[in-house]
Length: 153
Image (cartoon, rainbow, N blue to C red; front, side, top):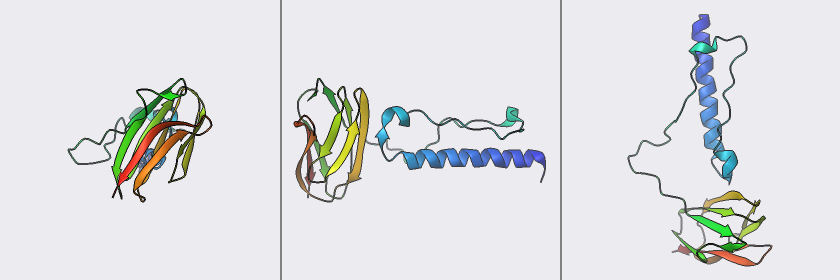
């Protein structure tokens, strides 16, 4: 195998690893960290003038746009616009974000899912809707309801 072929294969391997990392990391967490892709490392001693960095990799081949993820905005420790109603069907993937100007633990009662949000931060919730009913989403430390999660049968 020539040096050029090895370089191309190494470049492709780096691209595959970066894409796999981004897919695996998409499960949730702080959006600030998720919005910044990791740098692509060049192989030591390699001619980097022929290595290209991928820009955008489509993850689906369907023409339908992905559904927007609802966002609950917390300002001054209260939900902006009042308690947000989130509705999903049982069996669906429940996904929403909370952007907060105060640090607190956000708790989805009934499902017992919790995430810490720092002041000025955003957290993402994503879990399967296995229980139907209406559930409180709360700033746990403040005891303030920020959303009402309804999972329909």
